[in-house]
Image (cartoon, rainbow, N blue to C red; front, side, top):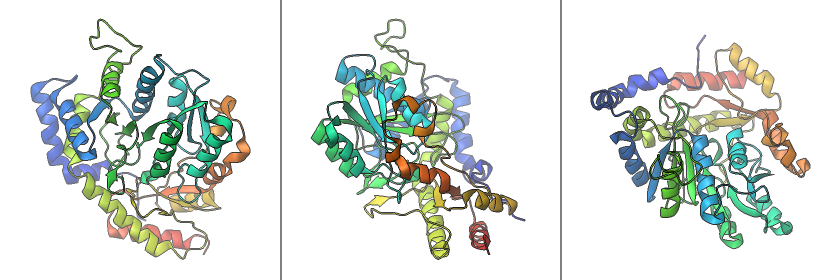
Amino acid sequence: MKKIEMLNLAREYNDYGEEIDFAIKNCLQHQLWVNGPEVNQLEREVSQYLGVNHCLGVSSGTDALVLSLRALAIKLKGKEYFGREDEIITSAFTFSATGEAILRSGATPVFVDIDPHTFNLDSSKVLDYLENGNSGKVVGIVPVHLYGQSCEIERLMKYSRQFGLFIVEDTAQAFGGKFKEIKLGSFGNTGAFSFYPTKNLGCYGNGGMISTNDDEIAELIRMLREHGGKNKYDVSHMGYNSRLDTLQAAVLIAKLKFIDLLNEKRRKIADIYYSELSKVEYLTLPKIVNRDATHVFHQYTIMCKERDNLQLFLSQNGIASTIYYPVPLHQMKLFAPYIKNPDDLKNSELASKQVLSIPIVPTLNEDEILYTVSILKKFKN
């Protein structure tokens, strides 16, 4: 029986180990482990790749969100944190860090439902909330480009201008994704990226990055990530120890040059899944609604009414799978006090009961992909 994993970093290392070894060896030679030259180099290269003025390495994707929101609070409110009267709209169907970051910035999260076809924030429901007497309370939106597909960023940017809101793009799962040939993470006031090892561009530990075209926001984030000051012995803001590690930056520089190739491999695997599984009645395949967007398939996420049984069947046949996400944010204890109308979040609840992500990493070979397809076709047969 074959064994097919969701992630195989050993295979990736076999493919690109020479470049990674070279990058790590350079670090061993210069021994500059904090704010080493690789950090600045990575920031420059990612800025150029995304087409933005600034990229700032931080310690995680979660911190990328938190520091973005903290910097916006300082700039827009003149305070270290937002107040609980300040509302920030985000998706109910995402990783907990998205909602957690809003709370940590001092604001109140407002969870809006998803489009059931894309799993992304439903922009029409965002507009409904804003037009229903709430625009005076809302200060910003944190849309998520979930599973590697662009959210309805064009419409959300329109609403941000119409209502005077900021946008922080949660781009943790969508490095290299595009909308109308513009890289995700370059639309909003900031973009927040994660380099966790499972991501399309991943390091060998924790790491994150913030992108922005705003000089003032960039300077604030530089301070916040190093204890809150231009001089760590004389700080101006309530800061963090949130620097991107030099060694992780080196690994990311080595892998960055391959990111477009690896994302294209993901799209080719997705094409096979679409072709082979389109007539399997008990599966709902992920939909690409907007052809102006370039999906990078961080995950290939299907839906099945008998999801748990399907996951067990796959496991019995050697195929790994993962549920992203089994509990929507509005049903978590942390966020329960901030929920206004859970009846408006039915799509998020349905997705949490039916979604299942199957292997789509670029290191899969054709035999493994077709084996996965064959097992999926056998379920219930």
